[in-house]
Length: 117
Image 1 (cartoon, helix red, strand yellow):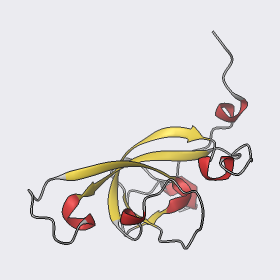
Image 2 (spheres, rainbow, N blue to C red; image 1 turned 30 degrees about the horizontal axis):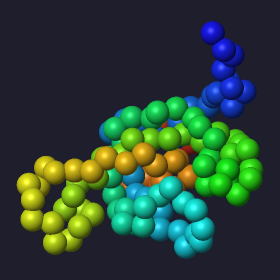
Image 3 (tube, rainbow, N blue to C red; image 1 turned 90 degrees about the vertical axis):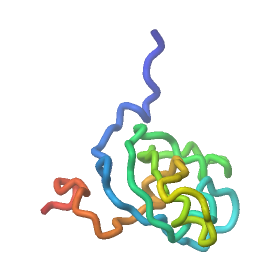
């Protein structure tokens, strides 16, 4: 079995727990970004953390993407993304977004140990 990449060995606790309500930052960042514009500024709920991975946004410009960042699966309600959405109120879209694009959205499920509370 091949050895794990060095970036996988540097594991720290993710900031958000499953079920946490988060807001995607609306940053004026030019260039290659994996975070779609249509979810910036929108709220979603963390489904799970996939683990830590090199940052593809810096890798696109020749960096090694370090330090690795937590990548989350986030569920957004369609009606929260598209103002004129007429489908079922439970319809959703699921996206993978890196932690540096997220902030708490008034939810108490953020892991307390990370914030020293």
